Length: 85
Image (tube, rainbow, N blue to C red):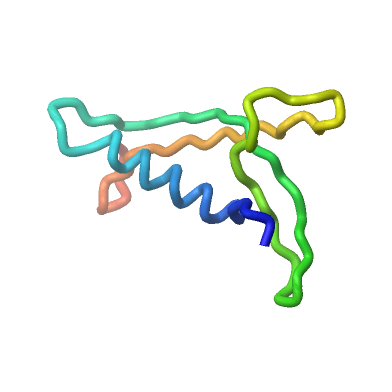
């Protein structure tokens, strides 16, 4: 185990945060856009190959560290009936 999350877990946590930020109060968000750095790599294990994508471990980077990728995610509110918001 490398201590890093699979990309799907990171996206799930971001979706949970978007849900908490977007509803319930006096202001409701119709869309939310996030762009953040992530470290991405393929990891092979006995179960197979997994895509690891998590926020960087450290704020500072050395010349030996690869540049982080950028992940841009946008959520839009869509009515339950599928019509335009």
